[in-house]
Image (cartoon, rainbow, N blue to C red; front, side, top):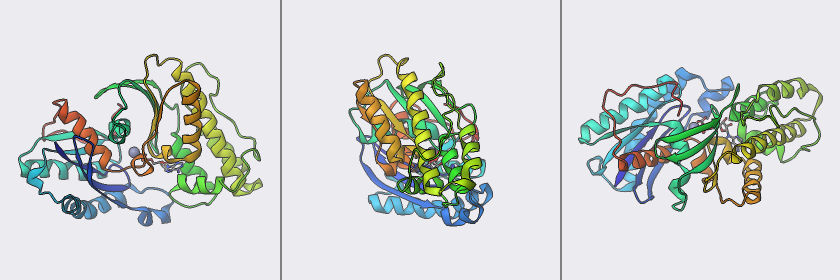
Length: 327
Ligand code: KG4
Ligand code: ZN
């Protein structure tokens, strides 16, 4: 089984070819950092136009890398949401057109499902159900992944996502864009105990998240502290919150076969290390995708497409783009 996957929901344009037996035959990606950097964040209209320019060459390049023709794919998968509507429409319309031209089925993929199933692409032994901490720029959730299309949401954020807090902190500390990796680099040079910062919702009964108060505290502390110390203290606070909330959810996830993390913030070394230790304390395997599979990419969309296609789930060509689409 060979699936072409497309991703365009935020500021990465990507195309990939993945097989049903987990081979990534090609994955191409075009970032848009330079276009958005002057604004310190993703500008939706600029993103949509950049996707239009980048997508077709990426698809052609991926097919060439894999040495296959479009006619050889078994299905085309594209992100149908959630995300910036202009960008989502570019990938969705392109995916439908390619499926139609090749006379192959189309699979509409929820971007969050792409993240949620991505660990199974590189970990054949990861079986359902597993407890997933999904931490990205737009989402922060704990999900019990029970099967393809079967996601039980145990918790979500009541305000900001963890990635958003990283990006805002980078902006306040003038560390550059994109924010997450910049904060992680600065944090490596600072003292995580230098600045006392709040741990919102830590210890609360429901395993929900909150990062708005932490973000505000960073903004208040910024004038009085070295950027590296504040970055390190902020990162330590985020890790503390993620750990406490995930441990709470673990207590409610009987039968979970593994603790899994996915999404852009899963690329963070401190987050990975803390979760690894937590899993060990609970006697569970810890699974984190390789870094390139954590941040947005099309291999995870192709893989989610492969899992859905294998389960007989395909979608009509009038499937709408969904800017908001909870799992
Ligand atoms: O999954 P993703 O690429 O896009 C969304 O679906 O949102 O996640 C992007 C988020 C951004 O907020 C980015 O700052 C964060 O992931 N991120 C990181 C790191 N790499 C990316 N946050 C902390 N540490 C990192 N190394
Ligand atoms: Zn994402």
